[in-house]
Amino acid sequence: SIHGVKEFSITSMKGGYRRVLQRPIDCEWLIVRKH
Image 1: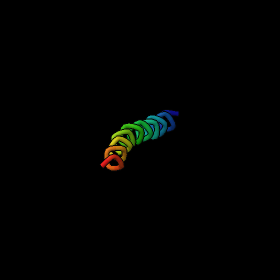
Image 2: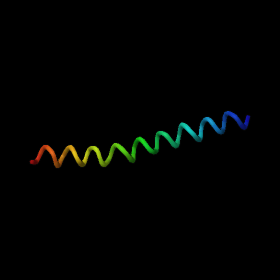
Image 3: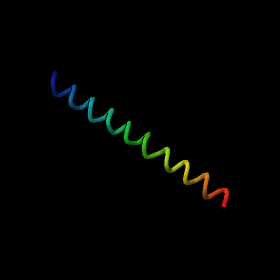
């Protein structure tokens, strides 16, 4: 159904955002640890 496709696209987008947000956080942690 169309509703299921919408939910899937929203969850996959959230997963993508999470990955994009996690990478800068990991980089910041590495910088903090070095200093």
